Length: 368
Ligand code: F6R
Image 1 (tube, rainbow, N blue to C red):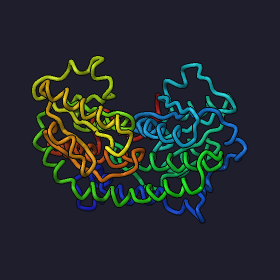
Image 2 (tube, helix red, strand yellow):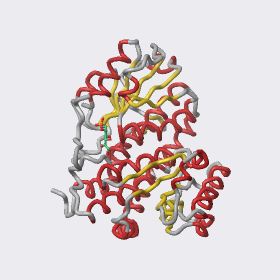
Image 3 (tube, rainbow, N blue to C red):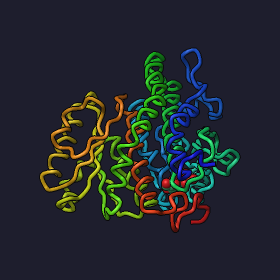
């Protein structure tokens, strides 16, 4: 059942190239995106003035990644809210709000309650789910399924990539309906997205380096993760993976926050993963992260750097460089998270832990 892998989590990590391909399959026809499941009237989609993503855990991190893309493509403000915080506030939601509920299981109680609360205020809800026939997509106004196949390990991996890819489709579809992007722009972005599965496979094929690193680091007691822009939610997700299955204290930070507190944590030998944006993207972003690496290394950090192939600027300051293929800046999170998933999985395996069933956690949280 585990296909020769030591855990379902390892198997699911290694299924991610086909998982993303399955999420994307059959969506483009004659240069137009078709989301047959989008049962919300186009006039409603044209009238919305805000998107609120509600989700928990890894699904919320997926929401935080796609916020950058949807705001950029559609020029609509996107808020990402933990579902349990959203439902106990008095959130500003109207019939012009589109709520996007992301949930692998489709059964997370807090996310379901947030969906009901939003619908009571007149908002339309799109569910981004993996499990067919589950409650959240049934109650939502429209559902977009991931098609990544069942996810068995408690720690979410392939569903995370599927959630991000599905939300990109939603964002591009909104841009198409609302006229924010020209058809050839959407075509060019989709062409780049369709190259992602092969690039995911390249990252997976190079997993030996990260597996060795994880085994060497199995005695670690604290690991920090830094990123900027889309690298920030990636840092959060990398930290979450390590906490939940390897029981190591792990924190994700926005690299720009370093000077506002977290740099005080850095002492001799502190391992810090840094997710570096593409040097071909917004140039100031790349150089800012490179200076962050310099700053923490000067204070003794062991810098574990995830950087694009060919990015030589990181080399002088990196103790370890983990390479990922170049892609559009907004799509990098589909690649940069993979070494962090492998790191957590391999480290927990090396510690002899039950990777698929971490203590105190359940796959589907159907209670508050
Ligand atoms: C982390 C993880 C959890 C879930 C969260 C939401 O690896 O699996 O954080 O992402 O409980 O679950 P769903 O997506 O089923 O609503």
